[in-house]
Amino acid sequence: MTIVYEGPGDIFKASQKTLVCTINVVGAMGKGIAKDCKERFPGLFEAYLESLLFDTERKAMLYMREAMERNCHTLVMFDPPESPHRNVLLFPTKLHWAWDSPLELIEENLDILSRQYQAMGIESLAVPPLGCGNGHRVYQTEVRPLIHHYLGDDIPIPVGIYLG
Image 1 (cartoon, rainbow, N blue to C red):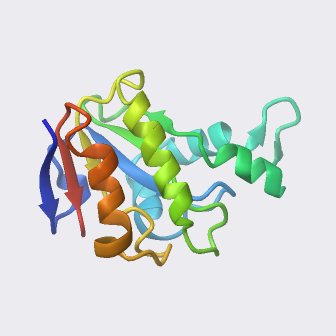
Image 2: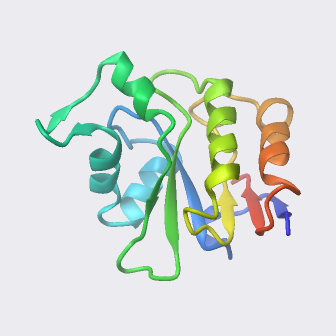
């Protein structure tokens, strides 16, 4: 399969099993789809912090630039206990919540996703306009070509793109 839908719609009503949740890597899920996912999926925020932000030895938050850069290519799958037929893929589109989304980061993580979706157990995928809301990217000219390049015909799973 390939991109089976692209257009307006609520990503939370998508038929695809895995929802992409765009995140930063400094521990804030206060706006956009990240906030919506945090509110809808109990335990997601804690999994996000544990997976991306904490040194498990010291339990210290890592705000240093090098830590942000190390974590920015970490895609994390979260399986909500109360939603066994749905999971959430945490997809970094920003280093810091206050900064714009670097297009290179979106592209690099799409590339990782396109190579690792099978190992992550992704069978179908619902994608928002990555980095386009609070990240200030332009969907049609910047993000859409990347999504189509990495998630188009090259991966044999149904992909829906939900533009809100």
